[in-house]
Image (tube, rainbow, N blue to C red; front, side, top):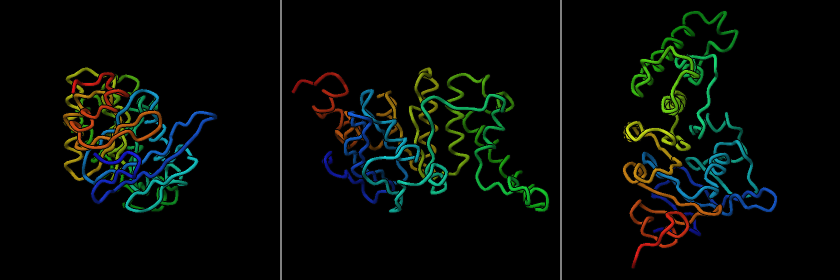
Length: 266
């Protein structure tokens, strides 16, 4: 078990969060959070409601400025960058409530988040010749492949508003993959879905990590966390409470008191 008051360093960390602090009036939403994420692994961020997990995601992804601290990806500071600049560095996040453009289909939604689209510049669109068309075709092929791997191919032409809650969760994962990220932050990817779909989402995340991508996810489904996460970070009251593997953090009396709601007998 790492020292929760220190930086909780993973071996050769890819993403390092150090002493993040953010207050909202008299509330310390982030009160010195520190941990790190190893590359090519799934790290779960768990903790009770109000622990500061989504606030942390907002800070790491550039949506929220903090009062103090550091977030480094491959040693480069991310704090102070706008969200699009954070994405350009290779870190992409999803949202707890799946977002979408009501008038767009699944295919159009995926295409929207593709990177390096030369046809978006009017000069390239008018005078770029075949290059923008080739890039567009490659992007379309990628969108179709991602839809297929996430079992969304049969709804590829449906509007986002016609999707089930579970399908919207899968589309959120697909949206992050279209950006070709190195690190993916997922905010409760299995929340509100049936157990069978939760299993499928877990399998998809394991496969994504096996391809070399790094996943940091917020999740309350402890069965899912125990099955797919190699590393676990526990937050409570805006602080890092514990880090380690699933079994070790679940055995920690402080974690049992703060999150699991019961302390096991000694």
